[in-house]
Image (cartoon, rainbow, N blue to C red):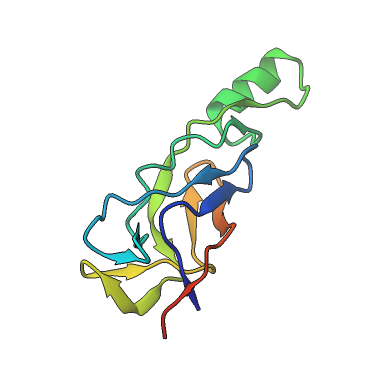
Length: 122
């Protein structure tokens, strides 16, 4: 299963644009790129615009526009850790993320990893 490293893109199911993953872990690299572990969520700050009514900012805009569905700037609140990690491969004692890893935003979005640079670890 491919292991994920910095530079891969991820997207939120309610976000408008994908964003790159980055890792503060500089001691464990694959082909010179830091590995993403199950706790690396701190850089997932904004997916551009958010379209879920469970986000209070989006709900307020919908209410003020008399129910017209619209978007608001994304200010994601990620609930770590990443799920579906490779628990038998560790980087600094933490399971590494794979192409199947996901995490949640507090507003209900599911963050998935896309644009995988394949680094397969057996």
